[in-house]
Amino acid sequence: MKMDSRLILALDETDVPKALHVLDEVCGIIDAVKINWPLILSAGPEIITTLSQKADVICDFKIADIPNTDRLIIEQSVKRGASGVIVHAFTGTDSLKECVSAAGGRDVFVVTEMSHPGGQEFTAKHAEEFAAMAAECGASGLIAPATRPERIKKIKESAPGLLILSPGVGAQGGSASNAVLNGADYVIVGRSIYGSSDPKDAAQKLADEIKALRF
Ligand code: NUP
Image (tube, rainbow, N blue to C red; front, side, top):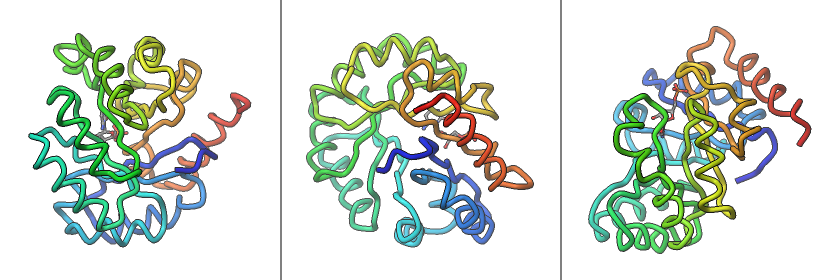
């Protein structure tokens, strides 16, 4: 995945023509597009291939199963053009190792502490352990909350070599600058871009905000 704007679009728009239009508008600004069940269920899995012709596609399936099922899901995602997948860590080391192996060099990003308030109930208690385990299993990076930037710093300390992708900017209350200043390598932004009346302008403003931090 390239590292130019450090902005990843979360394309949870379920109106498929609108989703494609938004991606066309912001394609030149973002470093990757992340898709989740809402768009997959609306458009069908072939949307992975369609989008992969325009940008790197991260499949945010939050995979959380036994190793064999994890492998089957990741193989299908990669076959359709995914350049990365997002997986849960609570399933344990064997599942996570299988995810990395099945991805065959594509990026595996591991959820640590989730960005919504409920993320503090369970995931926060194990976030540092999840991060260390992700590093041990050969994952590329971590998902850590832009809504709690101080936690990004802590989580990064547990797995210094891994990329940090931070969702929770905008609609969930987090700020792109605060996330990056606390160690996020990329921010993931959905509604504040695809829900905007001018997605291109919204994406450009976020890219400019990050660039102003002088990378
Ligand atoms: O902890 C997480 N928080 C989160 O919001 C892990 C995620 N993968 N996400 C995803 O990021 C969420 O499912 C959505 O696709 C995106 C954030 O979207 P928005 O709040 O910017 O609209």
